[in-house]
Image 1 (cartoon, rainbow, N blue to C red):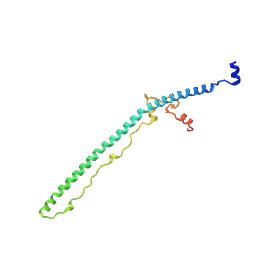
Image 2: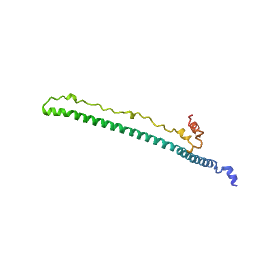
Image 3: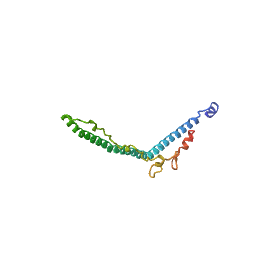
Image 4: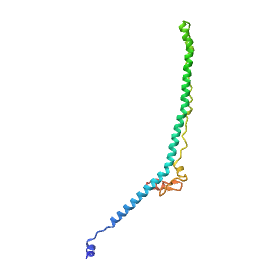
Length: 163
């Protein structure tokens, strides 16, 4: 009799609920796979980021190291010029004390020449992401975004309306 009542009044239809549960399960699995893929992709790129960071730090240290000789040279030239002026002024001081004529035109400023060639720097040759992805021994991207020579975003972008 329950089948008769069910056919007349309708029964509990669980197909939509089952379909939603299945869709939720697939979505959860996709999210887990995407997270694992993102981690794998990121881990494969970290060595290149480390190398590029270290190249940048080394370049900064090189520029800093190249400024030291220029600073010391400018200091030495200034010190030497000051000593020359003091020595050139001694006879004038002596003449002034003795009441003899003094000619201050012999005291002239001196220019300090500093080589600023150290400031002409070039960035080091950084490793690009495609180059890094082709390095042997590195974690290679897997899954729907991975292409033969690295990451192929065309499939991902096509889903967003791009190319």
